[in-house]
Image (cartoon, rainbow, N blue to C red; front, top):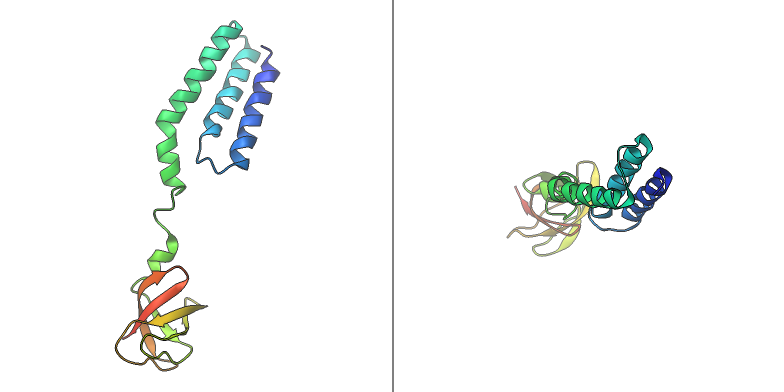
Length: 143
């Protein structure tokens, strides 16, 4: 096949990766297509059968060796959410929070919904500690 066909295949697969939440699957096949296109342009790839074998080998090798580390690096599975780092942080009550009640607290310059998880009422302006995060609601306790 002509080198430009491999480049088109590679670009199509990279675009497909960008358009789908595939978690780094099509990207390796797209890069493999671009690599084979470069080898064909340099005259190093041989016949069409050899080109297809190279395409497959490059894609599978990259998939096996690089997919796991890239998924971990870019947090594709969402295992380490930054919002979870708010636990044990200190916030200031914007509203009075009765026991079990919901109100607002300020943390890191932003206003958050909060639920009082403690045994005592938290008054406006009082400091409280984030116990846990549930979605966008902070569970707080008076300090």
